[in-house]
Image 1 (cartoon, rainbow over the protein chains, first blue to last red):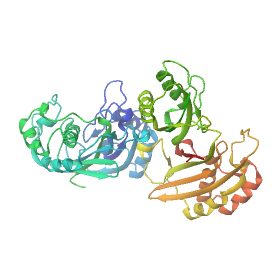
Image 2 (image 1 turned 60 degrees about the vertical axis):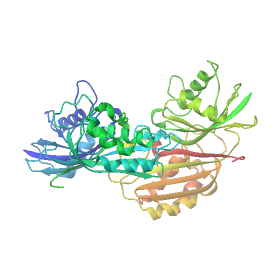
Image 3 (image 1 turned 45 degrees about the vertical axis):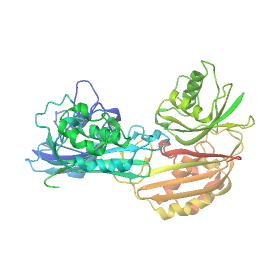
Length: 248
Length: 248
């Protein structure tokens, strides 16, 4: 048996999220269908670094699967891409040790969130950036970012439905990068709770609008209450950008 | 009666072209539906600078329509965008003289054709650039471009079905711009025949592959025979970029 690690990109617009759900078009389903075709109908299960929600994109989602087939890495990439719809693309396939696990071995993850601040709506990126043609205080946004860095209980910044017990996560970096009319948040952490990046972005946008202050972040974190944070930013600006493992 | 000139962008991916065709989703139909809603059900006809095919995009298509309503230009833009699907965007509305005609008054047009030469397929631009991960001789491509400039009979570079009698067109400029992995053709002319830009691009790509030489262009033009030119490049890389009128 061979274990393969795959790095994939997908456009989340026409998927109901990553994870298989009955009768819905999901990324996992399409990948398992492609693998099944390559294995003459045999069912092959894939394990990803984590799920992404409907509308959320990936530039570097990572998954693994086991196969009896011994195929060169580049040939695997070709075979998979030939069997996948064109909103999923396998960027890389690597043969890895049988101890590798795409989910349990994650060391850190990077998410990015893209906003288009231009007045005119860009029809070509309508599913891929959050159009936000409103005044924003970029300095206040830059000031807010460092407050999230470090180890914190992120209860205020996750969906109230989250059932994970330990809501402590370590954020290694959070930057707001402005290039022309595009504002991009880049956040790296050891793990993320449900909706966490989108709620952080939504809260920072309220700071940019002057509804909250950068210095409010510590008390919002301390409150451990979802109601203290801002709105959840829409899914279509969010990208799972990169997943890091020890061997990286 | 007021005449309004509209500059619009659209993503051609989910349209069966610009022009109204029975029971098909077209750009013209969506615009006329929006105008009809704004005019309480009255039918308003729009006139565009020209058609675009299924899959072809516009960054600056121009059209005009007449209306009994007197609405400020910015309010027109808002009202139209509020009534249009999100793959069409009205960038500008201007009140113009009743003698203005979006089609008959065109002085020149610019089209652009975008290619992505990267090895990896970009899922986010799958409908908006032609993925071309093959070796290309960029120098040969640059050499080929000037041969198209000037007044020529473009019979070899239009669909054999074209019924227009006079196939002479004047190309003012044609550039191939390489930026990173993106190759963009920019072509300006006084008019374009059916499929003309896509056949020019397809022919230049064959030159880039070494199947034809830059110096073959004059004899291909002289042949006035579609079979002498290269393949028609796919629709989804093409953009109607800008339409110029005398008052510009």
